[in-house]
Amino acid sequence: MFPIRDHNPSQAKPWVTWSLIAINVAIYLWMVVALDTGEDLARLYYDWAMIPARLSQAENPVALVSALFLHGGILHLAGNMLFLFIFGDNLEEQMGHGLYLGFYLASGIAANLAQFGTEPFSPIPTIGASGAIAGVMGGYLLMFPRARIDVLVFLIVILKLVPVPAWAVLAVWFGLQVLGGIGADAATGGVAYWAHAGGFAVGLVLALPLWLRRGGPAFWARTHGVPPHAAAPPLGRSNIPVVRRRR
Image 1 (cartoon, rainbow, N blue to C red):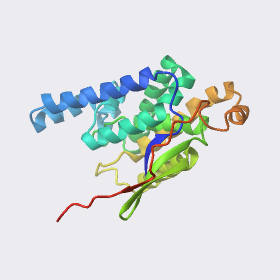
Image 2 (tube, rainbow, N blue to C red):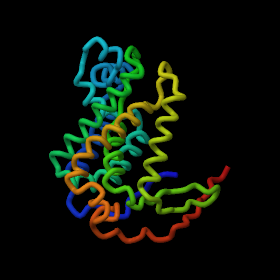
Image 3 (tube, one colour):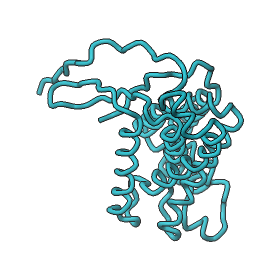
């Protein structure tokens, strides 16, 4: 199950969301072009990734922010940017550009601190925008719990687009991060599950004042729990045949 889009894209131009996507893509392309050796990459991570062992020594606290703009591969980047594209625009419209940017960075810093708290002496670098984007997802859950999210469901040989309420998509995603964090070995690296879970929880809390200013439950009553503007047209056919590769 993989989210593709929401049904209510923002009517305002999400300049911050677009800019964050552009910056992340540009930095990744620079990494691909400019870093010639593994030593170059290791030096970049040492200087700019969030390394818990360094943070424990009060070294390089700027990495709590800079790590949010580094990615370890094209799929890592593409997945993060897709989630930011889906969930960021409506939250930016509600918050305004400046507040949304602060919210994004604060969620990302909190996510890195959550990961740091689970493994404060680990030498393994933590990179990626997913903690900050998890905060965006937490805010989205609070503001628009009944928004429809098209998810791609894999059914053996058929891909089916299924509209699912945002609360179900995001609750399942959050639960998977917690379960992943419980089962992960902090010494072996891999997915920073606690950064995801921590960013999500902090994003939900940081969005709470905005939700209350909008009226809290009254905001949900007015908007029916979805972004307050017209839905996008359907993508078309919901069943997409899969082409098998020849062996």
